[in-house]
Image 1 (cartoon, one colour):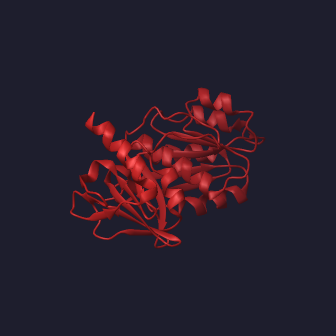
Image 2 (tube, helix red, strand yellow):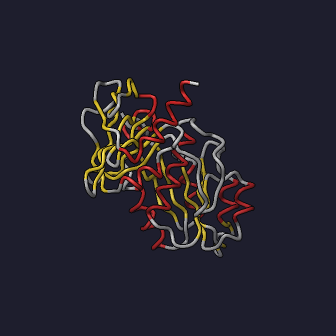
Image 3 (cartoon, rainbow, N blue to C red):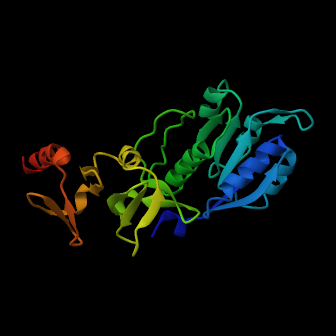
Length: 253
């Protein structure tokens, strides 16, 4: 079962630009486990609604609200500690101040869906307890290996738990992701090179141009193939034999 099947996070957005509110609304609606509670241009209206409903993640724009005399950081200070904040800004100059407010993330400049998805990853990590001390970062900084990986499949965004992925198979322009808790593989449009860069090397190893496997699911290793715990046999490519042998040597030391 993927995280999206068991999690629901209530979200809200505060920003003084209608276009940004609509953009965030569209992004949030792409995630089946995110529920949008409201979009607000006024901090006062947002605060009134906040006390009437539980909000897990608040996306807050940094601006000076001329009429309400409350800016984004002032609003964030009024929220309960259980509400995680992701700031939306057009410059990096407020990053340090937001860091001191224990922000979950700080997105600056034009916010693409990819950047937004990374922020959602952080929320998932925090609320699943995998990394409640997740490091604050500005868009573009590298992150540590995540407990989940995000893939597009069947017009949805799936969050697959890394610990349950036992094999990734390349199929031309697509890859199949096999998980222990799913009857069928997840087919997603991406390359093996991309998957290899996203999967933590401490847990996964590429053994063939078309196969990446999780080390913990290896049951036996032959001359030309690897048997996984579920009985499936994976071929070993000549180009990847050395790194497999290096891994096995370390395990036998």
